[in-house]
Image (cartoon, rainbow, N blue to C red; front, side):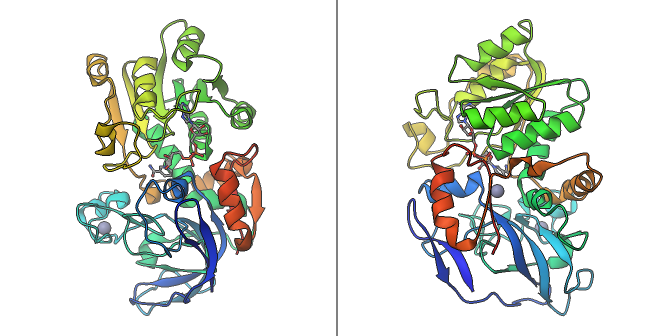
Length: 378
Ligand SMILES: NC(=O)c1ccc[n+]([C@@H]2O[C@H](COP(=O)([O-])OP(=O)(O)OC[C@H]3O[C@@H](n4cnc5c(N)ncnc54)[C@H](O)[C@@H]3O)[C@@H](O)[C@H]2O)c1
Ligand SMILES: [Zn+2]
Ligand SMILES: [Zn+2]
C-alpha cells in the first residue's frame, strides 16, 4: 500500500510499504477514508521529536473496517469507525478508570505510559496516513459512526483534536458562565474555544498572532486577541476590568514563541498564571516533553521549564496536563455533531490526496496563510 513516511527533518515521502495484517486475534484492519495532519506531527517533522526514518505517520484516522481478528465481536466488517489516537488495552488499571491515554500495557517504551499510532516514543505502531491501518484491541478502541459519508469532515476531528480540545476545557474546569482564555488558535485551540462555548462559557478569548486563525476564532463567536499587537495579558486584563478570566487553556506547547518568533517554552504558562483569577483552573493540552535537544535554553533541553510557579501557588491555581483520553469524550462529541450542536469541520482548509502530503506538510509547517487543517483522503 501507499503511506506517508518520515524521511528526516522537514521531509516526508509517500512510499510503498507492506500492507498491515491481523497480528493478534483482537486486531482489526481499517481502510482509511480520511486522515489528518496534526500540529503534533510537526514536532516530528521539524526534527524536534526522535522518530525513526521510515515510520508511517498519522494518528488522526477514520475509515471502514476491512477485516477483523477472530476475537473481535462488537465491531463488524463494513462498520464506519473513528479510531482514537490512543491505543489502549481496556483492562489495565489506567484504562479501567478512563485514562486510556496512559494505558499501562500498550507502550513498550521504558518509562512512558500510553501508546499512539505513528508517533515518536508512543510505541511501535504504524500510523494511518496510508491506505490501511492495523487497530489493536479493536472492540475496545473503535467508535462506530452512522454509515455513509455524512459529517465526514466533522467526525474526522473525533480521533484526536476535538476530544483533546474538550479535555482542555475539562481540565481547566470550565462551567456555564465562565470567562475563558485559550492560548493558541491552531486547530486544537480553536476547538477548545468551540468546546468552551458549547459548555456555556460567557466569553472566550483566543490568543494568537496568525490573522487567518484569529478570524476563525471570531467566526465561531470567540474574542480574538493578537499577541503581535501587544501583550496578550494586558489586553485580556483590560477587557475584563482587571479581573482576568476564570479558566485558561494552553493549546500551544513547548515551541511557544514571542511576537518576533523567538521561542520561550515558559511564555504561555506565565501568561496563563497572570491572566487566570486566583483559584481558577488551567488545562494544559499543548505538548511539553522531557527531552528537547532543540530547546531555547539548557534546562528546557531536560524538560525543566521555569514558569512562575510561585505566583501559580500564591493564587491557588489548579493545573491539569497530558495526552487526552479520547474515549472519555468521543461518543458524546459524536452525538453533538449528529444533532448539529457541534461542527468542528469549520477548521478544514484543505482536502488532498496522499500524494500531496509532502507539499501539505511543508505549507502547514510554515503556517502558510489559510493552512488551518489539512485532511488527506487516501
Ligand atoms: N494533549 C494532547 O492529547 C494533544 C493532542 C493533539 C495536539 N496536542 C498539542 O496541542 C498543541 C496545539 O496543536 P495544534 O494542532 O493546534 O498546533 P499548531 O501548531 O497548529 O497551533 C499552535 C498555535 O499556537 C500559536 N502560538 C505560538 N506561540 C504562541 C503564544 N506565545 N501565544 C499564543 N499562541 C501562540 C501558533 O501561532 C499556532 O497558531 C500542540 O502542542 C500539539 O502537539 C496535544
Ligand atoms: Zn493530532
Ligand atoms: Zn490499558
